[in-house]
Length: 153
Image (cartoon, rainbow, N blue to C red; front, side, top):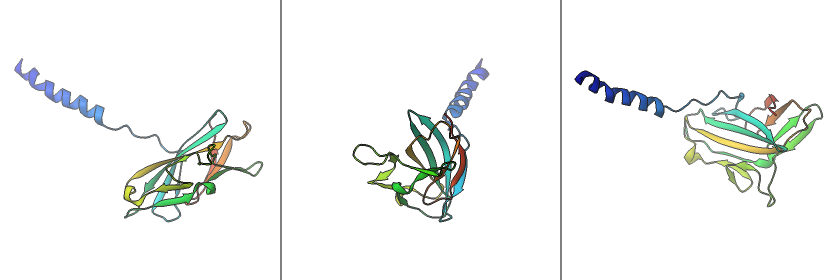
């Protein structure tokens, strides 16, 4: 009986360890290099709902030092190639872009929070393209374009 009672703490530790291990994020849809060579940007998801397209990205600091990411949200868009139409980020009734993290109308990831090896999430909301559009190109000012992204509806 004594041997089995010694196993209980070990089993408890094992099961708690499994519970505390963080789940791995799904593979990105596409990854592009940042223009500065010290960032990689993952497109994690796109979804449409109620006439709105949401795109979620993860910036990864692959460099050796802290980085700051700043650009005007007005420079973010997606391109629907068959009609050659650009769709820019939506704004709320006060003119604030539907995106985060923001500093006014500037997307801003502060250097103090973006250390080597860290990852920061960013999202944007756009008007959804017509149902007939199956793929788009997403453009961020500081990364190579994300091309031929299939839309899930």
